[in-house]
Figure (cartoon, rainbow, N blue to C red):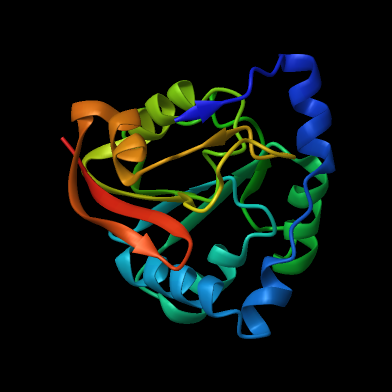
Amino acid sequence: MIETVVTSENFDAIVKSKDDKSFDRYYAGRRDLLDRYDMTVALLRGKSVLDIGCAESLLAALVAERRPDIERVVGIDANSRLVMQSKQRLGVDADVRHCYAENLPFASGEFDTVVLGQTLEHVHNAKYAAEEAIRVLKIGGRLIVNVPADDTKPHGNHLRVFISIDDLKNLFGTKVFWDGWGQVHTFHYAWGERG
C-alpha cells in the first residue's frame, strides 16, 4: 500500500472537495458500478447494515428496493454536503450521519454487515478505519470492502493506493476470515466474516 501523508487540517479540505455521482452513473448503466453495487446488495447479511463512506447513499436506496429482509441501513460520510444530499434523496428520516470512519458513534458489535465501498482510499487513517469497521461488526458478521485497483499512485482525494488484494486483506489482519476476493472490473473486492 502506498500512502500520501495528510494532516487532519488538509484532510477536511480534501473531503469537502469530494463529489459523487453514483446515482447518475448507476442508472446510466455504468457496468463497473452496476456489478459492484449489485454484488454488494446480494452479499449483505442479517438485519442491519452500516455503509461507511456512503456518499449519496446509493446502497441504501438499492437495499430499500431489493432487500425487504434488511430492517436497518445506516450511512456515514465525512462530507456533510453528501450527507445532506442523501437525506434529500432518501427522505429526512433516512439514517445518514456526518462522521469520520476512524471514530464511529456506534456500539461494538452493533451491525450484521459493514460495507466499505470505495472508502479506504479516501479516509484519513486506513488502519483506524479498518479497526472501527471491525469493532462495530458483530462476531460472525460480514465485512464487504472494495477499493480501486488501477491507481498507481495517490492522487486527488485518493490518499492511498492498494497495489494488490493482499494490501487490502492485510489491513484487516487476522480479525477477518475472507470468504471471497478478487478483482471486479478495476476494483479489488473482498468479503469475509469477523472472527
